[in-house]
Image 1 (tube, helix red, strand yellow):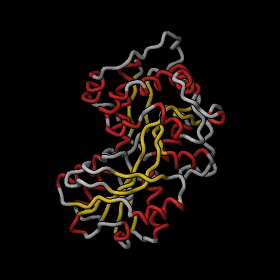
Image 2 (spheres, rainbow, N blue to C red; image 1 turned 90 degrees about the vertical axis):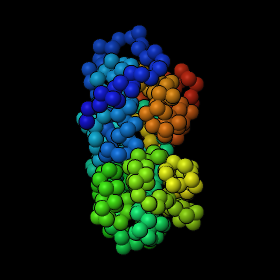
Image 3 (cartoon, rainbow, N blue to C red; image 1 turned 30 degrees about the vertical axis):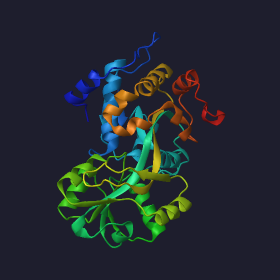
Image 4 (tube, rainbow, N blue to C red; image 1 turned 120 degrees about the vertical axis):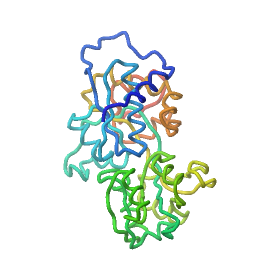
Length: 324
């Protein structure tokens, strides 16, 4: 999906640090695509804003594309169909090791990390009238887990298995899933995205809903069974009618690129994002975590040489095993 005029105008209004490098740009592409996820989710908003920043600051025509999410994004970057992909590190690790649901047996060895984005918490929403206020209440219910291939679609079924919940699972984009909840076509929508999740905020503003994660006991069970996720406390006040926060789990997100991306371009993109946090936060509040010091949240995926050059300049220590 191409950038909207409003998104480009908003990006142009940001006060950006100088990003043009006095170096050879002859190997730069004239355009690039960024794999995001479904509309109504944080990836699409973040990726659209990122594309606008790249277009305005680097002179490369960047566009955000709707995809199935991290699992598909990893493969699209590996094959070179997309130049940048937004991924959560669980699906990225499975792709790296040849265990991707989309391309089983294929090690995605060409992926390289660019920069840290933010943590993706897992949350669920249901109408209050459904009586669903806890994960255990989803047993036997119709539950969308977002688009097939997304982080939510990969991990919510694993959470259900850990907790002994047998839900009737379906797949759909964030906006479609919330519409299905409102229309009574499904009982709940279990998703994963940077908070506040725009689709959740919209349904909460229009309907009496329950938005929840896990109890402490449930979270402990999940953390023990799935070490790739971490504890996360969703703060209160993110959604209308929810002054109190709740407990859940989360997973880190990173932007990735193919190893063949020109080093100078990867350097400029990483520098652009890492040095303009205020502009990134205007795109989405989750970018409060889009900071150089969070580069250490990547524990397995080698950094692109261009990104390495930036982090080395800033004194951010990158382990030897991630410098391949």
